[in-house]
Amino acid sequence: ETRGFSETRLLTHWAEIAGPSIAKIAHPVKVSYTRRGMGATLTLLTTGANAPMLQMQLPQIKERVNATYGYAAISHLHVTQTSPTGFTERQFNSSAQQPKIRKLAPKEKAAVKSTVSNVSDETLRAALATLGENILTKPQK
Image (tube, rainbow, N blue to C red; front, side, top):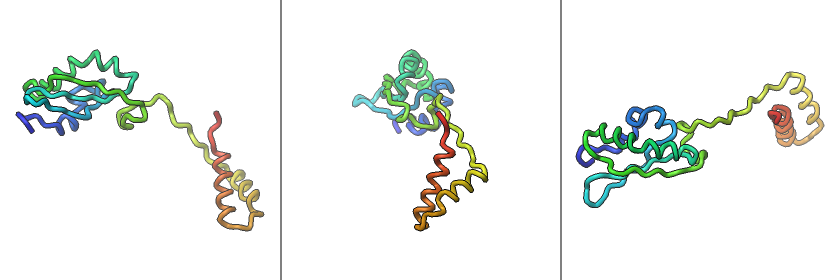
C-alpha cells in the first residue's frame, strides 16, 4: 500500500467503481507502479469485441478510479484483449445458450437395456448402455 492505494479494493469493488456496464465487459488484472512513485498503470482485461467500446470510456474509468482513492493514483490505463474463453466466466455474457438435454422415457431406457443385454461382460454392458442413453439424449442440431 502506498498513499492509501489498495489493489484489493479495486478488485473487490470493481463493479461499484467502474459501473455495472463497464464491469460486465472488463475487469482489472494488474496495477504497475513507475519508478518515480507517482501514478500507476492499471491494466484491464476485456474481449476483443468489447475493446473499442472500452477504449472510448478510458477517461471516465480513470476519473472514477482516481475519485475512489481521492488522488491521482492511476495515471495510465492499458487495455489487454483476450478471447471469450480466456475471459472469466462470471463476467463474460455469452450469447450462445447451452442446449437442453431431454430425459429418456422409460420405454427408451428399456430398449437400450434390451439391446445390450446379450453382452456378457458387465463393465462393457454398462458402458454400452450409457453410450446408448447419451446418443438418444443428444440434442439435435
